[in-house]
Image (tube, rainbow, N blue to C red):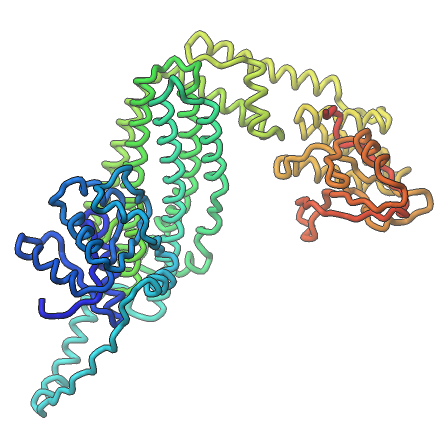
Length: 614
């Protein structure tokens, strides 16, 4: 070890070696003198020599991978010894925090000061910015790279090189598979970017599913004192996060799809990766719904078996992630000698916490990858059979009926919370026993009969006057029967168009309002359906605007509107928030704030709800 070093990199081989190697190579390229040892080659004498290297250095980079400090309880652990020595020498210690790392509750007193060192979170998405930030933390400065030595070649050497170079190039090009040209390199890089964005979202979905499993395990561990409502709130938040993952961002572009057809890559397998992402996210949500169901107080599955089921679901997740790893490896098999693949393997992959795809495990045997994919699916099937044996077919069927019922209600315009409350209010808590299956079927039948009765009772007729038709429309909205409400509007429009010049316009706005309820969450308000006599327009309002608030106060119906307006001085301007079709004219609504002058003309309003709000 004659070379002098400025920076020492400490790491745990299991989980930290790839990042340590990347940091070493990058910092070396920038001109720093960096020491990076190979832990597996250590011996007693070599370990002692490390202290002398640390003595030379001014900076001590510590790669904190998940679980890397767990073995520091051992006084002879070399990561602990390196940290202790660096602290004792008062070196500039820079922790590099990898995803999934957290400090143990207790650390040996000799290294506990490590908790208070400013660290940097590793970031493969903004790698250059991460390295720049790391440089700001370093005390050492890069030295200029040594000048290249001039090598005098004899004429014989030059002649030999001129003869051998074409031969070497021919051999290399003959062994090289793909990519060969700039165009092929662009296809490769575009495919790798597509794969990365899909893996990122698969990783994100895995994280929130794992958080849900952890929350359930924590709840079951303290079931006597833990709050089930708090668990449900956390699970709902995780489901919402999963639903908000925008998979359109990772969709394959048309250009890439066309390019893959003339490449050695399997275009169908590449496109299937995004399809699998969508299926995986849906599966995560279904799994959270299921574990929410089996942790209910009314569940006949005891705590011990519920814990087993959670363990099985973790095993399924592990097999699915193994499958994703094999599938990704197989998709990219055609790439050889491409820098972008090396960046993918050694910069992107080390940051994946859940997906177990690592550069060190990269394979080039297609048959072995296909075999492992089959093993994953076979394992998942066996695990699912174990779950079925614990829960029973009746319990699975009841759960399915419950969620189908809730889904049916949300499809009709109810929010998830409203749908669950409606199911619970009509049926009580659904028991996971065979005798209750009939009760669930009766509940479904009761709901269907309730809706059929409403359809018959409030069925719109051309003989109904306009006020009755509008009232029936509101009644259907109250029952979340949106299609029936729109039928009422259609008949209303045809009856009113000859006598009301604005009918066509505000009826179209009413239909938009109904179709947007599931998006806006707003099923109330007052619609502008006309102006003062002889007025052709209004200073602020448009026909079809739906007033939902006045001076910041929610305005559900005319009674509330009048009460708020009566409290505003007649010479004072006021503000309203209205729902209005967006400028793109795509049928979506947006909220717009209007300032209504005190002197503004009046408008004719119609209620959009029959509910009473307190």
